[in-house]
Amino acid sequence: MKPFAPLAASALCALLTGCGDTFRYTLAGAPGLAPGDTLRLCSTFEEGRLIAAAVIGSDSTFRIEGRPAQPLVAEMRHGDRRLGPDPVLLEAGDIRLVASGDLRPWRIVGTPLNDALDAMSARQIALMPELLALEQLPASPERDRMADSLGSLYRQIPGQTMEAHHDDLLGALLYARRAAGDPATLRRELDRFPEALRRNPALESVRRYAEQLERSSVGSRYTDLVLPDPAGKPTALSSLVGPGRWVLLDFWSTWCRPCMEELPALRAAYAAYHPRGLEIYAVALRPDAEQWRALASRDDTAWVHVVNSPDEAAADAAERYGIRAIPSNFLISPDGVIVARNLHGEALMQKLAEAMP
Image (cartoon, rainbow, N blue to C red; front, side):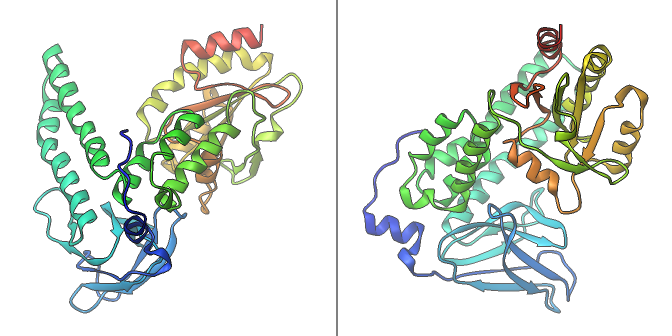
């Protein structure tokens, strides 16, 4: 990330926070809901805090007007369902949902940052037909080379957009989506953003992520979790930790292909080391319920299975451990200290051999 060019203090304050004054936005369009349905506008980086709501009119459209204290990243929701692939960037002006003409149900346009996000999404979507066509071709070195090249181009687009918007809400959103590294690296990168923008919920989420990584780093004590098993019984991670027992805390899900591919290695590790004291506490993040229960009932995966409850406790569990991708795991010693993380395949077997000779 490049250093940020300084802005005049008054201009920057007005751009990012309004200097204590609210600004006006409107959001309007036809989101594909039925008349009488309720659309909710929620803050993406504030645990879904409700910002505003509107009832869909007889013409299948809605209109929301608001005056927030600072620009926000928001998402439209109907019930538990998020509407549309792109968030709404709440900034001064008239924001509109318009027909897309591509894979998206609509485009969000009308203000500078929403127009820029729309353009970024359009660039990525334009590459999708080629990527999908390559997937249909027989496997070959040439196909893999072309797919890697096109995939790299696809992934570069958000980074290019972020660099062009390093001092506004769009840049903060894109950085929050891709923030990675150790806590010190995250804090250095956050310090490159203007001070006022660092107080925005989007970048506050990165600061919290750095703190979560510190709490779940190797050498730290584990954080207890209490989540329901397949029978709905609350089951504590702490019930497994203790003298003579090593615990692998594993975050996974049924929809995650790498997680499912990891199962044979987990089965082998459990078969070899459970008699010596290995326990597995597997946290499934929003799995297919039927598939999860079937897998949990198998003899060869007879470790402790827990899942996110209706109040999304597992999402909180993943957040406590700084989980942004799965599969992810932590090896916890009998005295409750995290001794390793993200052990997969042979690396897991080697570490268990060292810990449990």
